[in-house]
Length: 358
Image (cartoon, rainbow, N blue to C red; front, side):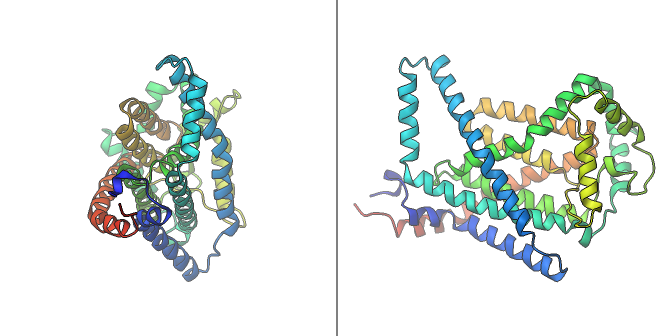
């Protein structure tokens, strides 16, 4: 029986994830080794928090998927038996063993990837204390004709309601990222676009969020003064403080919390400006969703642009952080595609050995 005529078995699903599993294992090994060299304990409690945070969001993700599907059946497809159709689709999903197995394998692997990322991010100030902020500040001005990008952003989007809107976008970014990642995990395991996204996700965070973030270690405009670099962004921070005083959605509390964590006795690091992983992950999601649905892709690209603007408007990032993040996402997507194509023959050969015979 040809491989495409039947859904992969559990063993085949495991073989289809061999490349991703190898990359995650290498990532975890590097993280553990570097942590050991610098005598930084592996944060087991943080790893558990990451996993639990992901699990807590799952019921809400399922609710939104079911709601979206029900609305589509009702108003687009106008199915008179929409509830019966939805129930049949849910039964088909939960009884598709290859999809469930593939999803569970991918969730475990991507959780391991996030644990490795978090551990490596915590090492950034240890390996290379923040030293690039002044350079990025000057580069920002040079690229924007002698004007700070935040001044341009606030000239266009500096109203009270606009700042609230972009703060809201930032607040839903993590949920949306987990939502797309979870959806990708439970896409059919033999879908090459799914595997390309998962590998690109790993490369984006490992290369951008760890390697380049360590080499070009920076804290961002919000912490420019705390680093002893002057009051270049005092006006920007005052605008955000004034906005926060109105009681609207604010980033000030989170920004203060991250600095307290960074300077506290445990020195948990959640600060890293270059490159912007908010922008990088949003661009990667837009590329992936665009491959699945042009409509979803357009919404995702609008969201990515909003995150890029918000990252500067809310003092989280220099504009060059966002530009770099977008480029890293693009490079990771194409690199992942090359890896998937390069190993396709080997994976199909391995899978065919366990495929049922006609």
